[in-house]
Length: 139
Length: 139
DNA sequence: TTCCATAATTGTAATGAATACAGAATTAAT
DNA sequence: ATTAATTCTGTATTCATTACAATTATGGAA
Image 1 (spheres, rainbow over the protein chains, first blue to last red):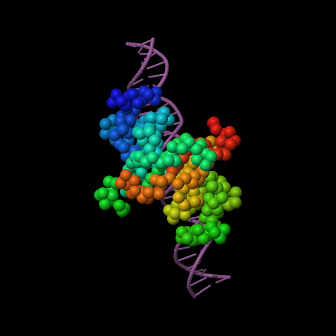
Image 2: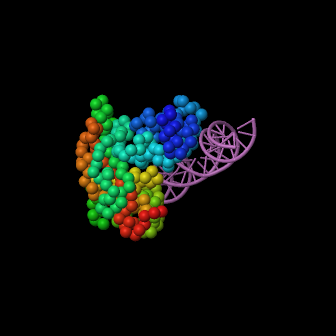
Image 3: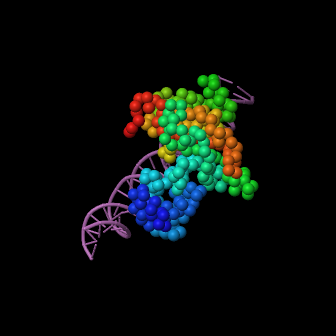
């Protein structure tokens, strides 16, 4: 709780109740929820929350660099609490997005083929470990 | 022209005039145009084209695996004529998406951290070579 | 070629996610 | 406690994409 408020203060975002709750949901849901999932989780604890607030808050968080937005599928934005560099796996069975800690040599380069590189996102698609174990491999 | 018709036939897509023209535009525009850019280019040669046809055609192409759709930004889908594996650089100055031919060791693996990998997309963001040469480095 | 069945294209209407906006509520500082 | 500034809420709006039905085009058989 204090930790969440500190993270908001660091980025010069006033720690309102709504913002703290939304950040908490992002921290506790490592499978990278979308707007709708966040809204539904919020409603359980904060039934008067407005959808607009969720949109505004997430946009603020992304603008200020507090969280990042993933565009791995065209249908929806998914939000990521972890801002240190890492990559992502989208499981085509359960739909979760899972952090992948691979160290690709190209991901740390500042220049490739004459282009200046400022950011790298590695998007892996496949079937996650948990679905493989469950035998959940075909739709 | 014949080559385009062959590519359509290979994927069991009937080679209508509209489809051939759209595929031709994708072949000639390596900076990965979006729907609107494709529509505007089409209008010059085919003024009666419908926007719906452009959407339908691109969706068909993607479903049949003839072209791929890139979700590098949340605002728009960008289309890619080249289906052999490669990665992409989005230039934040000119907005072009440029093919990047890096051989990342993780991109060819079939398994990472227990997850089954079926596809990898590397999205680089930065400033392209041409913008750097022009000194086009700040907005 | 002509006819027919199938498929593709077109244009309008509908959908729905995201944003704009203005009033209400909350917060922070004096 | 009062005030000013900020945030939140809910409705209205926007706009990209899709649904749909009518029209047009295509490919094959006679």
